[in-house]
Image (cartoon, rainbow, N blue to C red; front, side):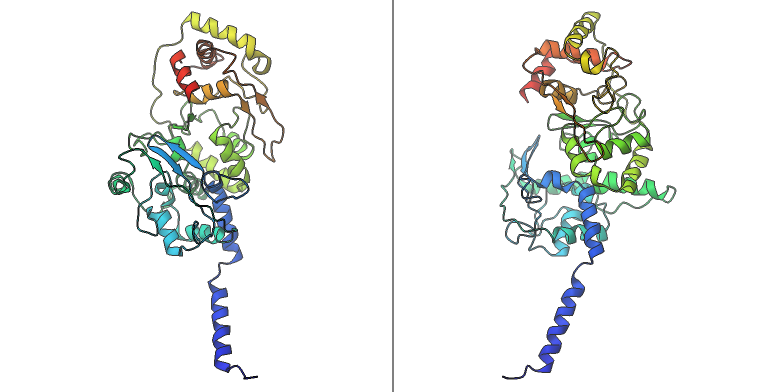
Length: 402
């Protein structure tokens, strides 16, 4: 048998050592996993729970439908063929490896604020996933939004790439919370209203926004519909368990709690709470006429026959089992979409390791007319110390159609 030249052995050993040196450290991968959890990547990029991160989940927007991409390391349909620089450009600049521009349904306007080390840590963790060969459909957008070249103009108007520089006048927790809320966690993607082109409305940060028929409530310090009445501990409890003494998570937020915030570290959740509690009240809620005495009386009657058993005569309910109605910030939002969704479709209390007990509310879409739902909605939004805009039967009809 011919002897293997020493130089070949030496070269092979060097190549193996170099490959191992290029592999991300275990700590980097674990850090990337924590960042993926904090960014709630699972909720958008998982259509089939048996294949997490394989994409294909439909995301409806006013401009048409998107299907989330495959994040597994499959070379043909995922990101297995991407380089680190490809991944960095996607998150920092919203540019695909092909050079085409992403739509902001992919929240690169938030991810651009992440550090390069964090972006590459996310990449390192995703590379450890099992590859799944799942081909995702292309976007189904209406004309003219199906022309991706329009994103050049959108980026020029609304996109400002660059990391989020720490505010040296603030503490470490505040800066960490800001980084998570405004960057990685992309909270404003849902909780900030959008203009006609789908960009954040300037001057209305965290003032609430519509998401798939739900209203993501205000996160600023607004007195009635914001977080002024919530303590930092209230926010922490809500994010960790999906409920607190003031509210319960439902709709898209329930998914966020289950897949993301309930799995985050105590420090990060506390940092988010610290930052949110520092936000001042933004734009004032719109004002309008109050419900008439007749509408309130009709709503009280519907409430007495359908709601009082769980929510009590004074709206106090059973906190952490059935959400209280008195002083409920979501209930007093200018947009009643979430309240109507819950009344029409019912609700199931989200369960987490910190709050495993269940609670549910029946759907009333078949039992109550549009007028009755409007009346009871007006009653609970304007009783128990609450105050909010009048809801009409037409609004209920529109919500029912969705």
